[in-house]
Length: 242
Image (cartoon, rainbow, N blue to C red; front, side):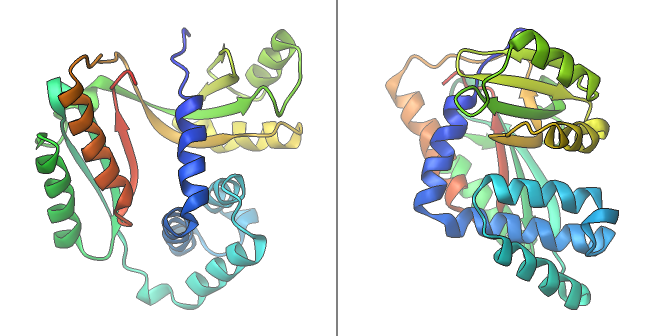
């Protein structure tokens, strides 16, 4: 699959998160709570929790913080009432945006998301209005600087691990999986000693939109920045060709 490298964006986000770890740790903490509630506190018997732990480690969350989060969630199963919600809409020049949230106050989150779109000249649409423009895939990104290997051999390793597709970019390798196979592929690569810069189930645009007007770029960045600052927002996907 011809790839559109997003590794630079991931590194940029990591740098921002390193400057404000409270945001990413809050996001992951909520994901841990939901995973524990749904599948129990033992990672050996809870693949979703194993995936969240892997995400936590890739974001430099200390092991003791992870353990505390699991124990806290296990001891307060009745008090964990986070709700998943997805919002779809449009930014400047028709850029498609999907916002995934995890919140204990749906009304607050909905108001904040609508405000973010409005302040950047965008608009919230109906469910499904833009999600058809994306493919839901497991995506594993490996930094070439962190993993020296023969690309052809690595491709075979990834495919043998159960991957659907493999793509070599300038700075990284991008491995795609069926969402249902993501956990298995990630664990197989982990066992093979492959370091992962990012590993998650994500929404990949089928096509990208170019923005040429400075006003549109500023407005879209306004939307994305406001969403990024909201602790209830877990993930934001868009088809802007940055």
